Length: 211
Image 1 (cartoon, rainbow, N blue to C red):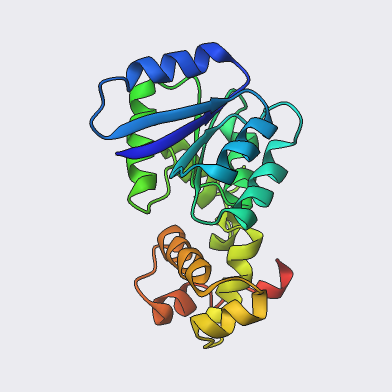
Image 2 (image 1 turned 45 degrees about the vertical axis):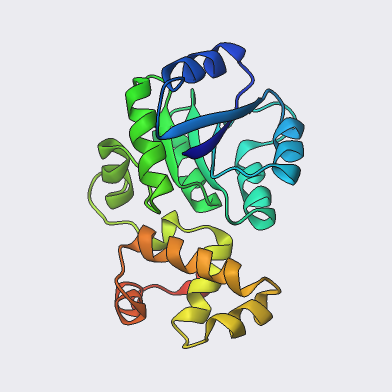
């Protein structure tokens, strides 16, 4: 089963999600946090695959919280389940390192769909968000695919397409070889690339030094 932690300041949200997945054979809700410190403390000692996170968690800005926790726990995936509008906050959340974004106006059945997709290594976005990523506000121009990568993912990407091996990237960024592999897999998924050659082709017109 997929161990999932709910980080949300509203107990009713946890209760609702817990009730929906109570008899699930796929998803196990292992804990909850009403404050960002609850999440920090839990991740220090317990194994979690996915954190369902409300961006408006007390005590810390949600976007910065994602960035910080991903650096500390790169193996954990973050699914944003928030009241905040996706057209305003979703792209920045994905750039910070989140693996998906869903507004709370959606039915909880979509949260199940999102958790399963993220657990399999994918990135969950709604059709509306996909259009937002593909086009700018006027619908006229395409956005750079790099827009959905986190800062650390861009650092790894830059080294990958320059031909650096995982161990070399690990040394350059002071992270473990396993962590590099995790970031590499995420980059491939987010950019829908099959291999390094495909990755280089998809980013050949992007100046990575601007990010």
